[in-house]
Every structure is written in C-alpha cells, then in structure tokens.
Image 1 (cartoon, rainbow, N blue to C red):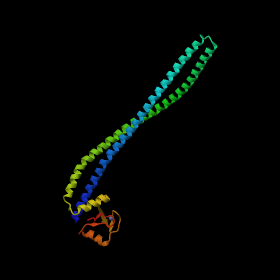
Image 2: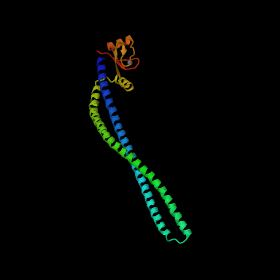
Image 3: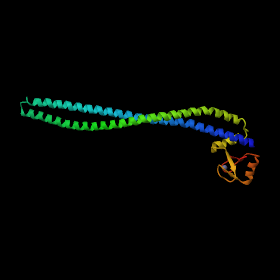
Amino acid sequence: MQQHIESLQKLQTVDLRIRELTEGLERYPNEIDDLKKDLLEKEESINLKETTLSELRTQRDGLESSLSSNQESIKKSEERLFAIKTHKEYEALQKEITDTRKENLEIEDRTISVMAEIEETEAALSEEKENYATLKNQYAEQIAEKEKKIEELEISRKPAEKEKSEILSTIDPKILPLYERIFKRNGRALALAENEKCTSCNMNIPPQLYNEILKQTKLVQCPSCKKILYTKS
Ligand SMILES: [Zn+2]
C-alpha cells in the first residue's frame, strides 16, 4: 500500500505541474490577444479623430473661400454703385451689399467655432498619439515576456508528459480511476492525515478509519472531502 501511495504522490506532483503548464499555455495567449486588441482599439480611435480633423479642415477651407468670394463680390458691387443711374437700382445693390456683409459675419462666427473645434481635436489627437506610443512600447515588452513564458512552458510540457506516462506505468490500473476522479473534481487527489484529522478539509477522522490508514492495508478516503488519505511515514 505504501508503494501505491508513493506512486500516487509522484503522479499528483507531475499532474499539478502539467496543470500549471496547461493553464499558462491558455492564459498567456489570451493575455497577449487582450493587449493587441486594446492597441487596435486605440488605433481606431486615433484614425477616427484624424478623419474628424480632416473633415473639420475641409469645412474651414470651404467657409474661408465663401468669405473671400463674398468679399470679392462686395468689392465689385461697391464699384458698380458709382455707375448706377436710378435710385431704385442703387437701393437694390446697397441691400445686396448689406445682406452679403451680414452673411459674412455669420460665416466668420462659424469659422471661429470650427477653428476652436479643430484646435480641440488636434490637442486630443496629439495626446492620444503620445499615449499610444508609450503604451505600444510597454505592450511590446509585455508581449515579448509572455511569448517567452509560452515558449518555456511548451519546452517543459513534453518532459512532464513523459514523466507522467512513466509514473502511470508503475500504478495499479485498479486504483487509477479513483485517483483521476478525485483529482479532477477536487483539484488534488491526496491529503495528509495528521492527529486524526484530514489536513485538507480539517475533518476529524474516526479512530477505526485512522487505524486503517496507519496500518496501510487499503486505500482510505476522507469521509468528507473524499481525498485519498496518507500519513507521514
Ligand atoms: Zn478531507
């Protein structure tokens, strides 16, 4: 029985290591993906702001060109005023000039507000770009570290699997399903029994059962957590 327990302990040690390796091999690629996704989102936000900025600049250019063409037309109308003969015509042209001036005031207001928006977007964009550059460097380092860990885990996995199959060959096939069931369900399959207690769940072990563990005549499971109990020999 002692032999069985020792083999199961070795199996549990290697199983715990394999589980740690497997978890790392699942976790690190996910973490790398998350970092890449985060960078991509920030890139998209930068692209979006750049598009907005270029639209605002187009809008500003349009307003500026309307303003200058209106100014041109005011200048021409003012020149025409001198050549006008009738009072009615004079008044009509004068009104046209006044309307265009009014329109220009509106254009100027809109230009000012668009320019303010451009300035705001430029400032936000430059801050975002700066943060992105810093983050990109940080993430590149983190990704490289994680990739290195993945590599190390992959290197360690094969010898661990090999060790496991070697240990498995020494284990009585009759007790293996019990071990595997408990390991899968409880995370561990073995627990140390000490001072008539299971050190895993802290449950008192009935004296008769505790004697059986000490005598090592058969495998004994904790009545509470079902782990296979062993004592320090
Ligand atoms: Zn227990």
